[in-house]
Length: 131
Image (cartoon, rainbow, N blue to C red; front, top):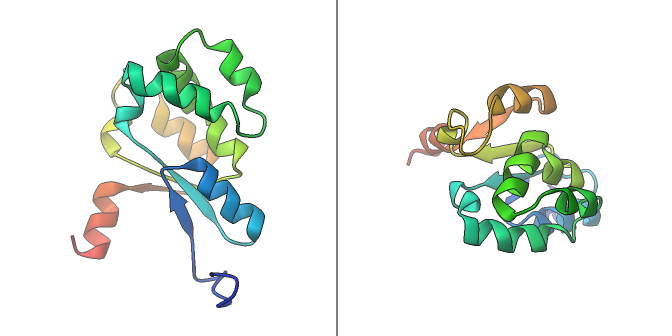
């Protein structure tokens, strides 16, 4: 739809589902795509399911094999940005409370600043959109 309406320069695609973001990128490589990260992803039950699902992304097999469980996988994947690299993400949107909580990662904000030009934050988006 974005391509049909010639809105590639005005649109960005973002989803909690990295497979949907990747599908949009494959449909039109000129559209910037992003991904959301949710704190619930580190819940052991959710993390174990996500580990199995995310193994299907390009280049993720070795990342998944190296982690003994879903929570360790999420922590390592998040620190290194593996999913974001696998889908060729242009940006990341996440709850700012993830940045400073060792449950999720260490030095996350610094890692993301090195990997991306900018980071969206739920609080900032809500202010801009008037929520």
